[in-house]
Amino acid sequence: MTRARQSAALVAAAFCGPVLAGGFDPWTQSARYELEYRVDLTPLVVRPADSIRVWVPMPAANAHQQVLSTSIESPWSHRETRDQNGNRFVYLEAAGKENAKGGALVMRFVVQRSPSKGVPQSDARPGTPLDPGRYLAAQRRVPIDGLIRQIAERESASRETDAQKIRAFYDYVTRSMRYSKHGQGWGRGDALWACDAKYGNCTDFHSVFIGLARSQKIPARFIIGFPIPADKTAGEIGGYHCWAEAYDPRRGWVPLDASEAWKTKRLDDYFGKLPSDRVAFTVGRDLVLEPPQQGEPLNFFIYPYAEVDGQTVEKVPWKLHFRRLALPKTGG
Picture 1 (tube, rainbow, N blue to C red):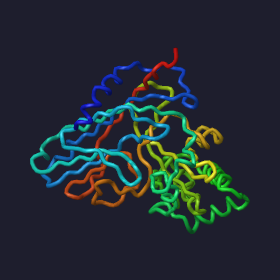
Picture 2 (cartoon, helix red, strand yellow; picture 1 turned 120 degrees about the vertical axis):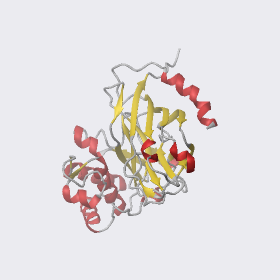
Picture 3 (cartoon, helix red, strand yellow; picture 1 turned 90 degrees about the vertical axis):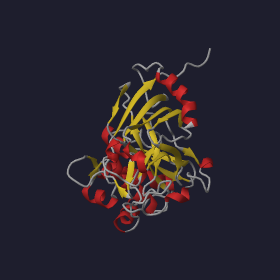
């Protein structure tokens, strides 16, 4: 609570700052965003319960994304925690008489994002969340054997370096899949389903890519956050966006966005560099939170997760609003 109060003044000042007008180019310019992430807690207290627990992700802080200020308002006790991947989130608990309190968790952030060319090899140190060795194993919906390995071996047969194989897998995904949200099965990041259906959203595109890379012992990691429209200065964000990074031992972590590349037909642009029209929140799949949830590991974590008396709540209402702010002027 103390930290939140200390930063509240900074957030208030930033939220009163000027909104950036048109002419913004996310490929060459950094961007400053104010975000308000609101979670409605009232539905969780509609019946008596011994324990209500809620986890909500927070924006990541890294070399190309700075969290300049944070403010948290909550009717329940809360604290900030981190998991083994370095993901940051707010954890709330309510028990006994506190359960009768409805209301909302309101988190406000000011985040500055720059175009990203990835993470240099020198920063990918063992034992840290950037350690490539952490991102080689199969996952529940991302196998690295069977069909996935067969495709990877075929697509990389004539490639000698990891860099060449990474590009070959990216090209395969953008060539063999199409972006669509029809029917059922899409959006779960099930690599085998996506290989068979040959369509899906960003989760499905990058699950296939990650499976292909890991099957050839190339580290690859899943990153999820929220997209920010480059042609708007304010509005509500309706859903998440995700992308991936693969590890080239000569260059480091290489960013890529196969689904946006498919939609825009800009394959070269979205390989090795990403624009500043997004805010990253969490890394990884099959996540165990801190403190650990009683339910199964999370497939991915971008929306609020809650448990009432140890039982997972299917949906927790949330809203995210953004405003794009003008960057401070520099120089004389």
